[in-house]
Image (cartoon, rainbow, N blue to C red; front, side, top):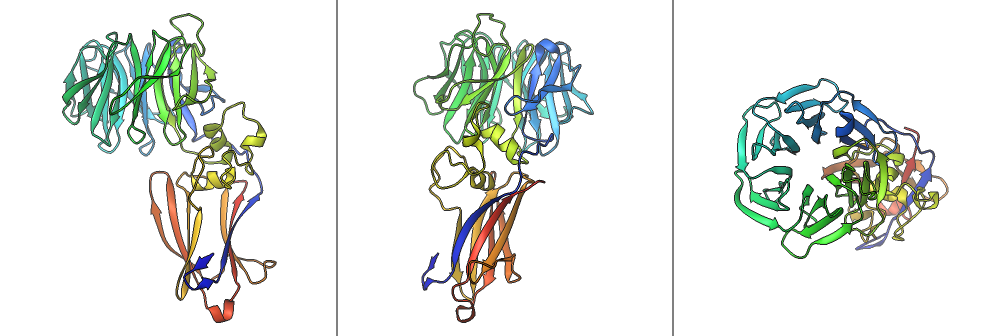
Length: 423
């Protein structure tokens, strides 16, 4: 590594794999409203370990949403015309809205404001309230709203109607400047927005497709076709994945009927059918990852060979192994041009900066090691001190420094050792 004054210290990123495959039941999950079974179900992100979270959830469960930071789960039951709140483990369930509803369908959360939005198909309203059901108000009166999403980046509300084949958009907070941004479809379902990527997505249950369109206009793109009755949808934007459920009620033998599926947000990869259910209506994701096994379930296909998913593999050939991609929070299928770490002289110190995932991973150990001869290494030498930690949504930038005196430590080597361990 070069400073402005020459080569003083070399910084080496090394991988040391000790153990992996320890699964955690608290994260890396999809939560599904299974209307046919009257249950809320939960499974790993690849559909494995499917089980029941809330066994008697209601007679007609519909939209589902979660707030991970507050440990809250919300879902609608239009059989009882109730919106429920519970803990993420399914406990402490209670109704928060139980009056004035006729067909509560989809839900969406404004987590910053602790507000819940919902469509009521039969009252022709989109409403919102506080998480506890208080301060309830009508956002907009619109014909048969069924699925919705919030783009809080651009302060927009998106929704689709029940049978008009339309998708609408309006400005928040008061649903002004309504636009009909898609028309001429048959029966839209599962509207979702990727503000950063510039697309919104939906299902068309009658043409059996997953589709998308640019936020600023353009042609409709078919991502996945030949489905049965696609309904609820959610996006894993960081992993570039779209998930959807298919109720199977068209009974045409389409791919993924009565199941959860996923694909790529650009439609490039083949559809994966993840789990079969009774009649799934909606789903949401808990994308927290706590170990390498959960990370592979989120990032790789279920049928991916071990040679592709192992910690030492490099699917995108960017000289960063899966373990480094896991550690740094980057995508193993997107060629990364940025260096993972940097070493800069700031006399009398050298400053080491590296970025790691903000996910609550438990099976990584990070050590800074130093050596004078590349044979004997001191772990976390005493002269290394932490300067600062900067957080963003997906990663943490860590800055550390250590004393460096050219006369005494010329040729000193510094390396960052990343170890995959048994948590």
